[in-house]
Image 1: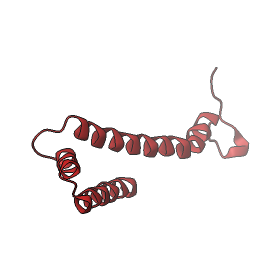
Image 2 (image 1 turned 60 degrees about the vertical axis):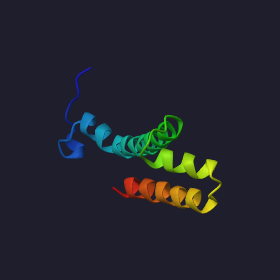
Image 3 (image 1 turned 180 degrees about the vertical axis):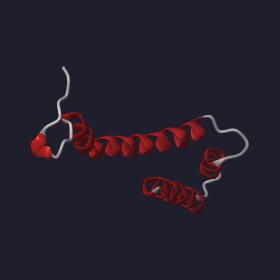
Amino acid sequence: MPYHSNPDLGGFTTHAIELFTSQILIFTGLRIALGLTWLAIITAKIVLSGIVGIGFFIWDAYYQNYVSKILLAALYIGVGGLLLDLA
């Protein structure tokens, strides 16, 4: 189905209008996807905790019962997610 220019819209095609109005939903989807990716990365680092990283830090603090370190890591993860959301 070809798109035709509409003189009432100043020559814009309906395809350009549909793309313009769908940008809000596209960027909302990207924002949600970025948040879920951040969650998946942190979860993978906790499950596959090696020697370094935030996952090992949380896992080690959990086994040594350091609640303050766990809260610090949670704050770090939250700030990182907020910075990714603002970017």
